[in-house]
Length: 323
Picture 1 (cartoon, helix red, strand yellow):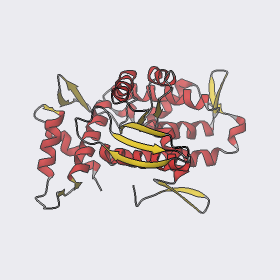
Picture 2 (picture 1 turned 120 degrees about the vertical axis):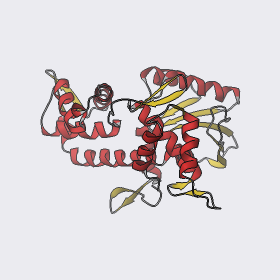
Picture 3 (picture 1 turned 180 degrees about the vertical axis):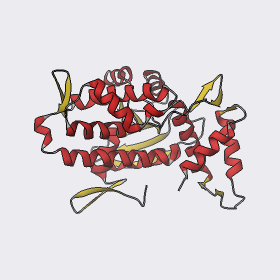
């Protein structure tokens, strides 16, 4: 298993004295950690998995302000903001509101203390946390789990009886996505293609082909799934998989949609372990042959297909053999 803590330190060490381009950093760290083994493994795991893990962690550290990218080069920031995930924010926010109703400002202050952003010198992590809080509040309100009354957020009365089950599932979702993220981009490409194939098969589709395209020259298409239904209709699905913390913007979605159209795919699926910015979600809603799969849907499909999550004695647990 990839040791994220060690990778984190190696990235900071590599950028401690000089600036490096992204690919240069990944290559140099891979070479440094590579064990001259004929099976192509290093002390931290298979080389391909290691490269993916380094790339994913660089994205995460950049999104959280630990690293800064300018003119194609990466450098360490002077301060060290904390890594924050939307799922963790969601779980902690529900835990706070289960105790009492709170204003948005009170939620901000309490979550700053819980995550420790009030103890860091950088304001970057505070800004990220505030953005996550706003996003989570909007989602939970739209789901009817929380309500706003007299300026205070509270658990909806009709949901309180099920709060323990809801909290348990939120914690499971947080753990699942954290484990997927830790295993890197290449793992996520294979994981999401298998998950989608299992879901499609459960709806009556027959999978005729399923493969990761691989390489940097994939044209924005990370995977292909080909299906046929009982009537003989064939579909050619194209998938892009992004294993990262930051939300996907409209530009990225438009670029993927253009790649699907150029390759004459019948449908496109943009899968991300985070979520989509409102403009990106609106764009996806406006087209009929391309959809977005976010962290929530990944978790739901994982539970339905029992891939990454297993059902045991009436409860869901993480499949530790896979993750």
